Length: 494
Ligand SMILES: *Cc1c(COP(=O)(O)O)cnc(C)c1O
Image (cartoon, rainbow, N blue to C red; front, side, top):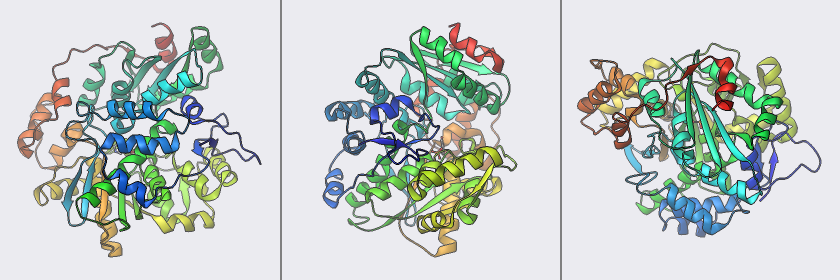
């Protein structure tokens, strides 16, 4: 399987191996790597996956895309990544939470957020890619985080051979729990630093480092190169295809559906990575009818799906589902490429940079309307869903997942479509405990992570997840706070 850039308009596009695509992350023309074709899942294939545990399903699906990787190594890496120690109780359990509605809980990993599903395996894929491509330099992963990605990347990359990682977070832009999770990180190849300013300042700082040729040369001289862990990298997207296929298998195994029955999927969306993985599963032949793209008050995707106009020039809202507070959903580029080809993609992406908006051609929107439905929840609606889901449905959902539940319900009310729906449940409610408590009508007695977690535990009568409980008593390792202009020095002066 070869990979090409979404913006490569040449008659014979430049093709790279999966290992190269994963090592490079972004293509040289700033496009995203995509497989040249989507492999097919046959009926026999799905029936056979249904007999396997999660890690075997993951290795089987990844081998279809990463054909240059050694299948045995993939299997042993998946076995380690999705082990019972890392995902107690299973990697992606499916929990019924209402009539024809199932939560696919993707947050039972070491950081209690769905990003663990990809970031537990991606570092191993990168490590293999370095040796497969004969790379002598070390990879230095740079992350700017508004909370969840940084911790999940630290946990995934810690102590991985050939790789170092530095995570920058905005000093006042993450929750107390998220901060504690990062500053107590263990591992010999990790570094964490707070940056004065907001998330944009931190993110721009990281982008400047990536774009600076003289810094790249300085790194080269020291025997390393910069690499990224975010969902523009195919190595992060591919592992996310697995859990939709896995959910379908689990529904078959429980007799809820038989092979061939269509299901709907609903995904709380930010960067469009998670929902795009579901789209790929559908293209592979998984019987998915509709996909509901759920947004919060930053409803740029809802508007796009409804009108065909993608317009990022709008007010930005800070919400209680911060991982979805995004105005540029990078992976939408991959969908444009699949539906419209590289010329249209390049054109739209250039307009997005110059004008802050673009209009997708009618031919592309027609294909989008066959599959995607766009809905959003305001903050008040999200709080209401958290309350109703807990007090009427008995299920404690985090704000991101609650946006998904609210949107799935809006879709059902509008369409009358009662197809069984799998909802991606993307974070433990304990990661956003303060907002969950407030939405349930209780204000925690203090601001410390311990007080907040204990309050949620006592209202909901559910246990604090073990990884978060453990974090409360770990020593703080990282206390540096710098200005954004000093970020490069922080890396090189280590
Ligand atoms: C990252 C994240 C999302 C959004 O996923 P995308 O792949 O960026 O669309 C949703 N919920 C949570 C909790 C997340 O951490």
